[in-house]
Amino acid sequence: MLDFSLSQEQLELQKMTRKFVQTEIIPYMKEWDEQHHFEMGVVQKLAQLGLMGVCIPEKYGGAGMDYNSLAIVCEELEYGDTAYRTAVSVHTGLNSMTLLQWGTEEQKEKYLKPQAEGSKLGAFGLTEPGAGSDAGSLQTRARRDGDSYILNGSKIWISLSDYADHFLIFATVDPSKKHKGITAFIVERNYPGVTTRPIRGKLGIHGGNTGEVILEDVRVPAANRLGDEGEGFKIAMSALDNGRFTVAAGATGLTRACLDASVKYAHERKTFGVEIGKHQLVQQMIAKMEAGYQTSQLLVFKSGWLKNQGVRNTRETSLAKWIASDVAFQSASDAIQVHGAYGYSNEYPVERYMRNAKALVIYEGTREIHTIMQAEYALGYRED
Ligand code: CAA
Image: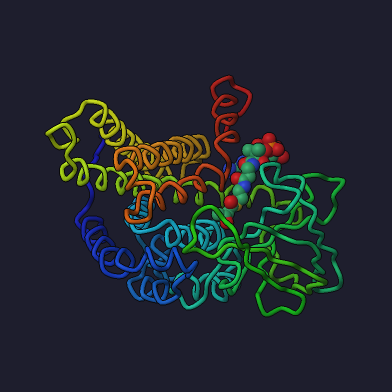
C-alpha cells in the first residue's frame, strides 16, 4: 500500500532542520555569499545534530535513519543555501554511503565512523579537467608498488576540496581497459603529494567551497583500495545514485524557497491598483513553481522508497535529479521575474537562487546526460 505520510521521527527531523536553517544559515547567507565564505561552524553544528550521517547505521556512527529522512534534510538545507546541501551531498551521499556499501570493516571503522559522526569530512574525486560527463575516460593513474599504489593526476570541480579530510579518488590501473581499469581509493588529505586549490570566479554557490585536488606521487596503502581493481567505475556510478538523490532533494528545497519568496512578494507588491498576485501571468509562474515542487518531491520520495528496499534505482534517481534540477532553475528564473527589477539585485535572495540553481543542472550528471539516460531506458538500450 502506498503511504505518502512522514513518520513522527521524520516530522521531528524536518522541524529541527528547518529551525536550524532559519537561525543558523538564512540570516547570514547574503553576507557569506558576498564574501565567498564557507562557514565550517555550520558543518560542526550539523554534526552535533547528527545531520552529517543521517542514513548511516548507528553502529558506524550515523543516525540510522532512512533515505527519505536524508532527502528531508537536503530539502531543508537547500532552502537556506545550496552550499550546505552540497556539503551533505558529497560528504554523505557520494562518500560515506559509498564506504558503507563497498568498504571493508576496517575501512568503515577507520573512515566511515568519524565521517558519520562529523568529526572528519569526506569528498569525492571523479571529475578531471578532461573527463566530466565521460567519466570512464579519466586519466589519473594508479600504479601498484608493493603494499601500496602510487597515484598521479588531478581532479577538478571537487566540492569541499579545501576542507575534506578524506577523498574518494578514482584512478585507472590500466587506461587501455577503459572504464574496466578504474579503481577507487580512500586518500587522506595529509598524504604527501596531495594538494588542493580553490576555484575562483564561479557563477553561483559562492558560499560553498569548490576546487582542484592534485595528486603527485601520492603513496596510498593497498588497504585503502575500495573494492577490487577495475571495480571503480561501478563504485562511482553507485555513489552517483546516492549523490544525485541528494541533489534532487535539495533542488526541491530551492524550488520551495523560490515559491515562498514569490508568494510573499506577490502579496506585497502592487501594480495597476492590485497586488501582483492578482495578475494571471504572475499566477502562472507561481502555479508552475507549485506544480514543479510537488512533482519533484514525489520523484525524490519514490526514489528514496526504492532505496529503502535496497532496489537498484539508477533510472528513477536520474529522472528525479533531471526534473528537480530543471524545475529549480526555471523556478529561480521565474522568481526573479515575479520580483521584477528588485529580483535582479541582491536585495532579495532570488538572484542567488538562480545562480546556485544553474550548478544543479550541471553537476552530478548534466541535464543532457540524464536526458540521454532516460531516452535509453525508454528505448530499451539501457537497463538497470
Ligand atoms: N551502479 C552500478 N553499476 C553501474 C551503474 C550503477 N548505477 N551504472 C553503470 N554501471 C555499470 C554498468 O553495469 C556497466 O558495467 P559493465 O561494464 O560490467 O557492463 C558499466 O558500469 C558501464 O556503464 P555504462 O555502459 O552505463 O557506461 P557509459 O560509458 O555508457 O556511461 C554515463 C554512462 C551515464 C554517461 C556516465 O559516464 C555518467 O553518469 N556520466 C556523468 C558523470 C557524472 O555524473 N559526474 C558527476 C561528477 S561528481 C560531482 O559533480 C560532484 C560534486 O562535487 C558536486
